[in-house]
Image 1: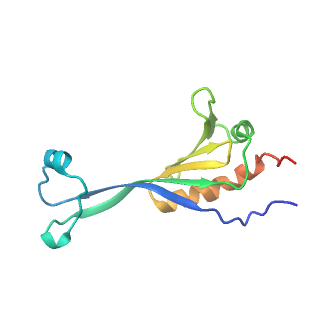
Image 2 (image 1 turned 180 degrees about the horizontal axis):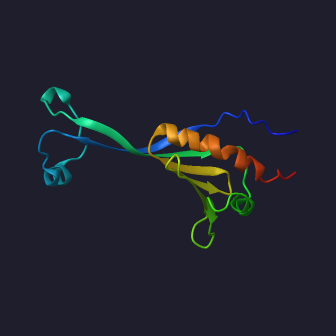
Image 3 (image 1 turned 30 degrees about the vertical axis):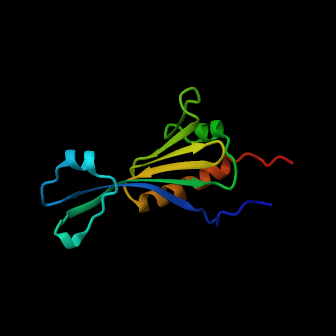
Length: 138
């Protein structure tokens, strides 16, 4: 039976980095030394502006394992794999400013500038991963 391209994959956002202006002075030393669980309470007049998400980290698992050497050979120079240095192949999508780490287990770690870039990166790489899936052992 041929695998379908219409597969629903769960992309789990694990970390988001954002920047913003507080429009007031913050004593970072005091916050770092005395803060335990810091809670933002807007009723006390602390305002922020220019909020921007700058990086999103997500994970996703393919429903199959992957032959990393084949994946890398098929997608050079965009894909690179150096097993002596790291167990994953790296696939960089410059147009999305996204990077996908592909593990032989089918697990992916995706970084990008926003959630949409991460989701688009997974959609982009899925057909390439499908071509390099490991056959199921019987």
